[in-house]
Image 1 (cartoon, rainbow, N blue to C red):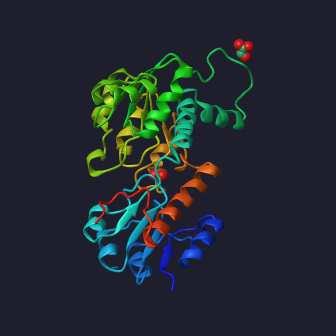
Image 2 (cartoon, protein in one colour):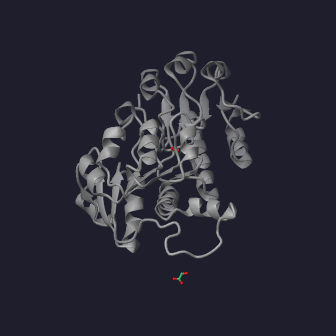
Image 3 (cartoon, helix red, strand yellow):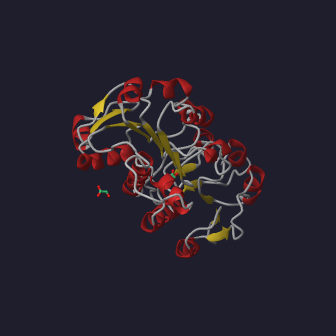
Length: 323
Ligand code: GLV
Ligand code: GLV
């Protein structure tokens, strides 16, 4: 008898086929996002679950399912899962790190450049029929080359973003819970470790790449935005909730900072409608890792972890302590 698993959302059909060779698979054909209670019920009798960032795997969901052995998330972020509750229950939790570093760093640059050079605003303007002549001051933006890049949260994605800045002749400053080893700093365009306040004060362009946790909740709020340069841009490719969206909207509206590029939002997909009335934002729907090869690699990585966890192998990306 194959172990039973649940796949919470739609995923590449060939990945489902792979899983079906090892497991009795219940797939969520409707692709509706399960509520906490639905997830608790659907997991009855299941040994494993393939999750995405849209489901909350709470202590209640875990406690209601004593046969559950593995929760394998198709994402590097795992703030949707109560890791402590899982660890206490002896449930393995895995994520999909590394396979998305380069793709996500590419996207951070896409957002940074689009935000600083007003690419989407310019396109909306053109599509609205407003382009009737060349003018010396049409849609002037900020320069990216030669400026100071600030990175808050210098994990593997932050380092990949920093590496790309060499071609733009940028100085890189960063803040992180701990300082990187000198060889990693050197590899990240000689990034310089400074306080968070120093990043906020000195950077021309700031990219947030820190994981969400109760400690990073509203790490960027009104006080932090007030430290930034008026000409600065802020890019968030990490998680909603790291930025206080209401404070950011107020700062953008008042011209306290120049612009923001946002791929993630508090309460997404139901983000604050105040963003829609601003022209100095670039808004994207949580697609930082969304290239075809990378989303496939993430799905296969989550599947590899689930197969290893339930068939006596060693999952590579365990977040919970091994019991
Ligand atoms: C996506 O947001 C991820 O955490 O992989
Ligand atoms: C702009 O189009 C230029 O030629 O400088």
